Image 1 (cartoon, rainbow, N blue to C red):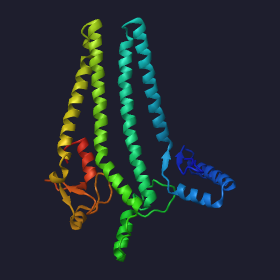
Image 2: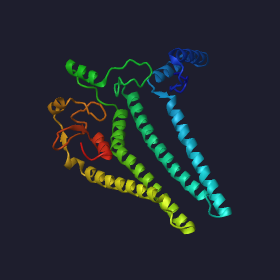
Image 3: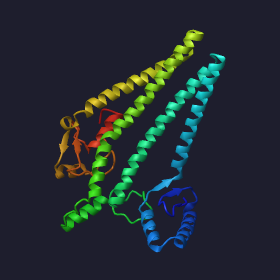
Image 4: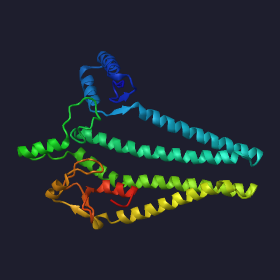
Amino acid sequence: GVGVGVGVGVGVGVGGGDGGRSLTEGYCWRLGDALFPRAVMNALRAIYLRSPRIHFSHVKFVAMIEFLLLCDVAAVGHCALTVAEHGPSVHILFGFEAAILGVTALSVLASYDLHVFDSIITVLHHLVDPSYHAGLGLYHGAEEVPAEDAADEAERAGAPPPPPTAARRLLDRLSSSWRDRRATLSFVIELLAQSLKFLFYLLFFAIVFTYYGMPINIFREVYVSYQQLRRRLAAFANYRRLTSNMNERFESVTDDAELDEAGRTCIICRDRMDAGGGCKKLPGCGHIFHKHCLREWLGQQQRC
């Protein structure tokens, strides 16, 4: 990968190996040293070392999805104009197919935006507290110590943990609110996309039936879309029923001994669980998860 970013502090992996990356970084830093004061460059180096690596595959993915979305919009517009000028034709089929593909591209892009926002919160946490999510290999060459090791070392030394800063408290409140809504937003995006697809299939069926008679060839697509929408609605109803009263339905875990027995690791996110971190215990099997992780799990399936 090639690290590009004298003043932005973001590494973009473009696939050139560590040698190409180091060579380009050296030229960038030398140019910066010649143009900016030493204090400014030291601050930029500190930001760069603590910034995440953004791989070029993300850029290619977003560019591809946006290009496909633009193609779908152009195809829908062309088909609509052609039908308006020359009357019903095969362009109706092409237009609705492009509209359905456009809905798919929009849902994928919206889900990716949720992932980006979640990553931004993680990066802000790391900038405020470098021990947050440390040791995951997300950052540029900074020496990191896993958060649980640092906490255990402080506990063994008998030193009280430092009080959280105002920025850390603000980020904790923001991330807590975001994690409680992240799964619901993802579920809503999938449900809206499936609803729009079913609506387009129904409109296509009605138009073809009006002008050409019974469209036997699209019975299967309409039925499959209806079944998928029905399953998503049923899953969403179960999800809302289970998450509407999570505090009463699932027992909160506040005992450190119980967390130690469970391994203190949430097997959904692989992160450390703390007694004051809002952990929930499932009835029956007794498995323990973070509350927000359990909410996201219930968004995919309603069983352990």
